[in-house]
Image (cartoon, rainbow, N blue to C red; front, side, top):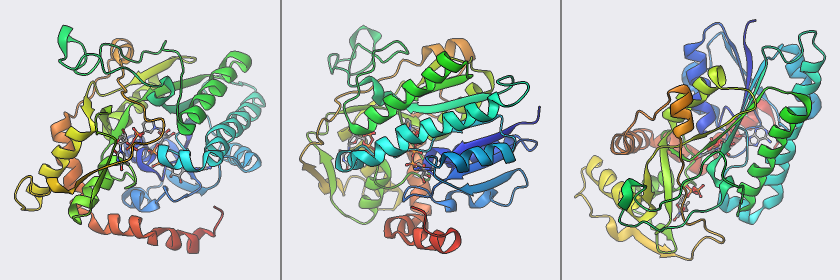
Amino acid sequence: MKKSIIITGGAGFIGSHIVRLMVKKYPDYKIINLDKLTYAGNLENLKDIEGASNYSFAKMDICDFEGVLELMKREEVNGVIHLAAESHVDRSIKDPFAFAQTNVMGTLSLLQAARLYWESLPEKYEGKRFYHISTDEVYGALQLDNPAGKDGKGPYGTEFFTENTRYQPHSPYSAAKASSDHFVRAFHDTYGMPTIVTNCSNNYGPYQFPEKLIPLFINNIRKRKPLPVYGKGENVRDWLYVEDHAAAIDLIFHQGKAGETYNIGGFNEWKNIDIVKTLIKTVDRQLGRKEGEDLDLITYVADRAGHDLRYAIDASKLERELGWKPKVQFEEGIELTVKWYLENEKWMDNVTSGAYQEYYESMYGNRR
Ligand code: NAD
Ligand code: TYD
């Protein structure tokens, strides 16, 4: 059966890397990018492949159940890779409703559309796949209990999130993602839909919206603006280069087992303040400034409400069962990432000014 795949959120950060990978690697697949183009969606991210014959774009809200069902029937869709979401924790603290709407109701609308369409076919779920991309934040927060990295365990803690860790989300963002994960598993258990869920750690790399730590800070260092470090900068995140995540998604989409959950992570824990110092030195060096001269941009500000202390993923199941491992070392990934943002100042300025939104509104109308 020829593959016809809807990738939701394909105009966003991670989605654009998956769309690009799939369009280039599988010329005989039909890749449909379904995206509402919120503030976080930008078709500029896909300029290099937008003319490919196996690629098409549908401006649509995942909550538009009728529209999604129609599209699935018309395109004879047999695979869904679902990334569309409201994704920024700070925004979820200000406007939790938008997160429940898109992340929970939107996921349910996609699931129900896929179910009704696939169950109407003679072969039903055979050859079908619904792959939901989620986050490690659903597991809550880990302790900082191993600062010396003893016992050969993580540098900051002895515990890791595994696929069996109890869900304990703290932010409206992670609560909404957790809820959507439960709906996906419920569709597997109740209707027999061949679903997969993956929970990944923090991604970084090109095309990330500059509200997230790494691109925001690169932009601010470039412009010599203050760097707002929440609390003491002691919080720990596990970072993965976005192309490694895209490679994992490709592998799991094709070889993962229906009904399973896989954790994806970088085995790469960093304290925020250490990342910030590394970014300053890297940007300074790449811009020909004296390395470290912008360290005084660091500004400690009030902590984020409910700020999770530490995330760390145990991705050994994925390595053991499907042979996946991250390829890009953090030092190399940061070097590449800083270089990309500095070489794409126009993209950054366009995104931070919001000019791209007006352009796409004039093309597709305002359905936000
Ligand atoms: P992003 O915010 O950069 O992109 C989200 C995309 O979804 C945008 O293109 C936006 O236009 C689209 N979208 C939002 N609401 C929509 C709706 N109602 N209908 C259709 N499209 C809509 O997000 P990202 O960082 O690329 O994250 C993608 C997915 O990966 C999310 O589900 C997120 O929870 C998950 N994830 C992200 C990270 C990370 O570090 N960024 C880590 C783990 C998991
Ligand atoms: P972020 O990139 O928002 O990802 P997440 O909250 O999903 O992990 O933030 C990464 C870490 O950086 C997190 O601990 C919060 C912190 N942070 C700051 O200290 N200052 C900032 O301006 C931002 C955006 C994040």
